[in-house]
Amino acid sequence: MYKGQVQPSTSHLTIKWSFDLKPAMAGRRLGAWIQTTDTADNTNGWGQFGDFFAGAITPAVISTSKGDIALDLYDDETPLTVANFKRLAKLGFFNGLNFHRVEDWVAQGGDGEASGRLATSIPLEPNWYRSFADVGQIGMARTDYIHSADSQFYINTRTADWLDPTSDTNGYSLFGTVTGGMDVATSIAVGDIINSVIITDGP
Image 1: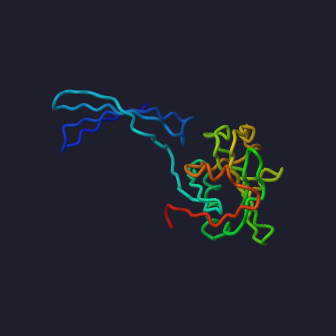
Image 2: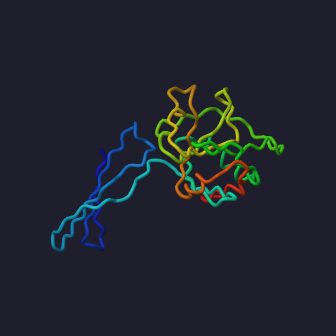
Image 3: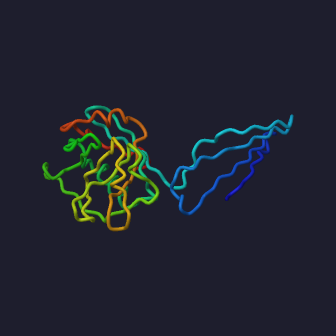
């Protein structure tokens, strides 16, 4: 448990805050609450102070022929996978590719092979902090060989916890989540175009 108190020198408002940060929860969004004390009249109140995130996030946008899908990418939780995705996006690798697989639970795209674009495979990188049980997660597609993910990614439009790893040698890498445009993701059909993937944080 980490507890802190902040008393601004220019205000009579005292803010007390606390939250749990256990090792097993590293990288999760943690609800936090603040207690405010007005020292002028000694009144107290509790209010929710949003979400704390114990890890770096990169915002991104998948621009498609159906509209935009906003993402958060989990740099700290899956650094190799996010770095690979960001590199390909900045190279324009995804531009003009399509969604080639759409089922009632998933939309998958990013296959450059048909257009002669080849990406380098990366090692499987399990994310132990999140689950495909939550709708709108971004994962890396692969073959039966666990270290074969390269450029193909998918968004689960229904719960899909069977994709979660149970060891370092199975499952799929969950490296981001949809933060906006989930209606666009659920409307994707086979052949819809990826106009671009824009990394909106940093160069």
